[in-house]
Image (cartoon, rainbow, N blue to C red; front, side, top):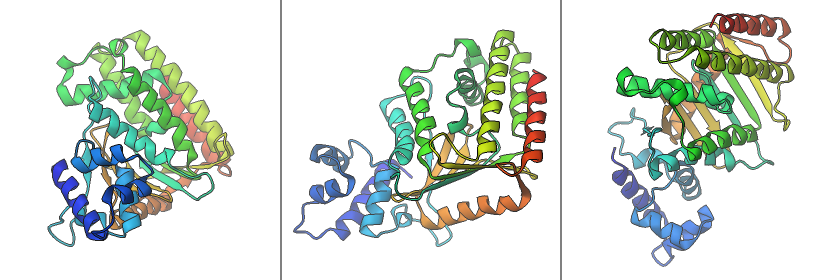
Length: 320
């Protein structure tokens, strides 16, 4: 669905809830806690409402996000594909990336929040502090989207500074969640190592680049093992790791905060299909939670399983 249709449907839903004698800009300003000029830019369509803003408005005014997308049947569920450009990004691309970080940034430290992912690719909040790993996923995204002829060698990829800041902010802000759970595909590191080996075999990743990736992966594994042993981040918020005994078709994520219930399905390596619909959220959440029955907990009490898992992953990385 085109962005302008979603915008028009949102405004129609808002106007249906706001009495005619009330000033629409004042009402929205009070809900979103932003200035009038920012509200007017959104009302004119110059700036789109963010996912978080849409969630806050729909929750406050008690209307369904599902209806905004004009579902053609009761079995249709609304999704929005976030096709972000990571090389030479425009302002709208940066805004879409920052919108996702804002979902975490908005979390109140005094309220309960949770986030869970069933992942067959390294979750971004875990690896985006690592320079070469972050570059590798940008590299792979570019190679798959535009072909090998269009992509630079890994060491030549230099992300925009604003992109790097957004990635680093995600790592920090995601830790605000009170309860985080990752269910990892048991083949996740095998997939990653195979990708690195392939691109090295076609001379798009140099031996020096492979060595940088190898060192970062060892550092990442050490960090993940410490997190799994403690079962919490440095700020005390909980984190749980499971290793699935079955493989996943893609990565599913849900985030629940006081202001927002968001579900995401990974697409095209770095992009995501997002939904604010309540029924979609419940479906994604139940799908992720059901995978625990096929998974092994390696956080805190699962000492033996945790030791064996990280030993196997280090052996994989050592094969690079």
